[in-house]
Length: 165
Image (cartoon, rainbow, N blue to C red; front, side):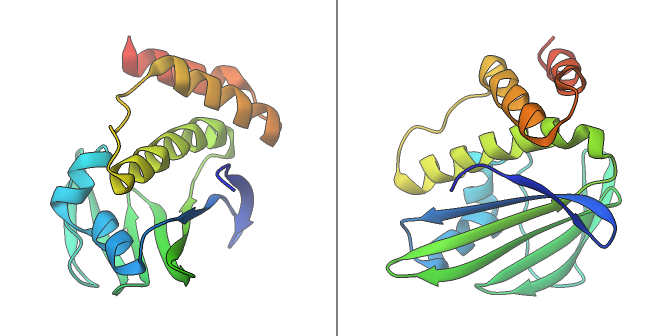
């Protein structure tokens, strides 16, 4: 499964993605916690090192809430929560990513971005070229998620247009 779902966690909208990656848990853990790996696939390279760690990114402060190598990483940033959970799955890893958001109407927009970034993570781990930012692909994913979640596709399309001008 590569597509995300929109659900409720603690009364807030949340996106959940589950992907099976053909790499051991320890390798996936490095890819989601270390600066060099994050720089290869994620929009904001940083390094996650311990629970209680504070960081600043894009003008907002964040804090690592849970750091349990190599299985769980959770952080708060900009009033929203994010986490990765990694489970061994044969010779690979079952990765679950959750983003608890503030505005349900932004669900398709956020889902399209996370879907795209998780595709980039998979390419990075597989040693393939990491896809460049592609506004057409993001619009396609936004529209898919808007339809799937019953949301207005124009909300995400506006954000994508503003970002890629």
